Image (cartoon, rainbow, N blue to C red; front, side, top):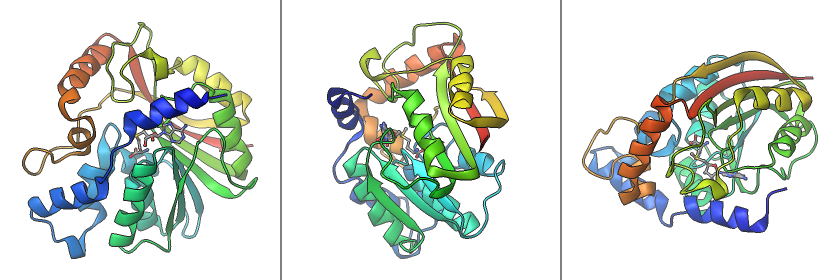
Length: 271
Ligand SMILES: C[S@@+](CC[C@H](N)C(=O)[O-])C[C@H]1O[C@@H](n2cnc3c(N)ncnc32)[C@H](O)[C@@H]1O
């Protein structure tokens, strides 16, 4: 069970006010037309995970997503992946995130690109999903579980809200063979709100929750920001982490080179 203190700390770590305006200002400064924005325009600013839009497309290519499919994006951040799936596949995406300011910004950006009928946003804790049993065909989550200690409950919840035969697709950081993790990292300043387990521990707890792996790839960590297309501030990592970013990048490089963190991309069937 996540403690209220931990949830508060995680919320404080990610939350930033005025994000939608900052993002729109950055896009305008980069010469984008705000009345004709595309998911590609938004990508450097709303895909908040290693590999950016390319990683979202690569994971989506491993899953069959039909038009009208019911998708949950757990820990969906600013909604970039949710809008991408809705645009590429015509599916209906429900996005849930703990950080109110992200959900608020996500709603504004979704309306701005005309996806309000297809993408819905909720503030909430992924460990206590406020959805009916069997209400989704796909649960999707990209780099949102690092702050969650009760991973058994997280994956049991994914199993509960998925329909029989549904799919779980994720991209997650896990603990590498060398420990401990060097801080700060993108998701935590210290180990009080960072909860990584090894790929072996994760695969057995996820199987115990009722999933069977179709794809399980350990891929090289790449938390470099999406390539800048304009001046300073252009990139979600810069906007959210600001002056802390150089230290985060330095620690991340060591974590990667020394095998302290691995990234896993997986697609699993719910049975
Ligand atoms: C690195 S961002 C990833 C956002 C999004 N998945 C993406 O790839 O663009 C991590 C997100 O996880 C969310 N998060 C962390 N713990 C959560 C929890 N218990 N429930 C829901 N969201 C959570 C944070 O608020 C943050 O938006």
